[in-house]
Figure 1 (tube, rainbow, N blue to C red):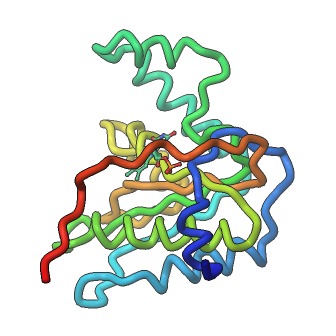
Figure 2 (figure 1 turned 180 degrees about the horizontal axis):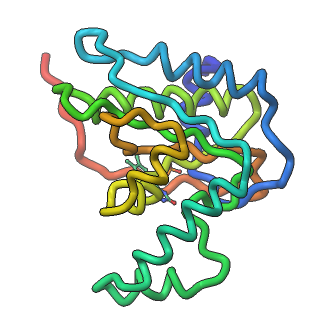
Amino acid sequence: MNETIKLLLERRAVRAYEKKPVSREDLELIVKCGQYAPSAMAIQPWHFTVVTDRAILDKIVAANKEIMKNAPEEFVRAMAADPDFDSFRGAPCAILISGQDDRPMTIADCANATDNMAIAAQSLGLNSCYIASYQVCLNAPGGETLKLELGIPEDYIPNFALCLGYGTEHPEPKPRKEGTVNYLG
Ligand SMILES: Cc1cc2nc3c(=O)[nH]c(=O)nc-3n(C[C@H](O)[C@H](O)[C@H](O)COP(=O)(O)O)c2cc1C
């Protein structure tokens, strides 16, 4: 099996990390791989916000908890009440991916960039967790101020993030669904 196939099969969502920071050199390489993802008509409708200051991530988590504690779903309120709840899954840093809101394939393009970065991180010996739920507070009424503080351009919508770090857990892959492919010819 070649190295690329191995990385694709071995990458897992990791939700527990060492405190050890990710080097600037690795982060720059990872973002570069995001920027080299395919995008419809090469529009590249993305913006990457690299956050290595855990206090900034904690501020986003606190804003999310404020919203979650009034959620209609009981399990979401329970998550908000958990002092250990962390939208960023205990990672020391995260790359937020925001997309230009008026482009036709923005979500797909941002998803491509996020996945490219997850694989790049894996190849550098890092672990990651692809997340979306962190953005609730940024896209809720009043989220504009926090978006501005994060330097997210005005017409961009945060949609995904990649939590990054050195994992302390090694989850087994979830079983993959059967019957999701047919071959013709
Ligand atoms: C679009 C998207 C959104 C996700 N959002 C979250 C999230 O908010 N929190 C989280 O812990 N994991 C999140 N995940 C990770 C998935 O739960 C994970 O990829 C899935 O369980 C499969 O596990 P694997 O990545 O190890 O193969 C998200 C993944 C994707 C692709």
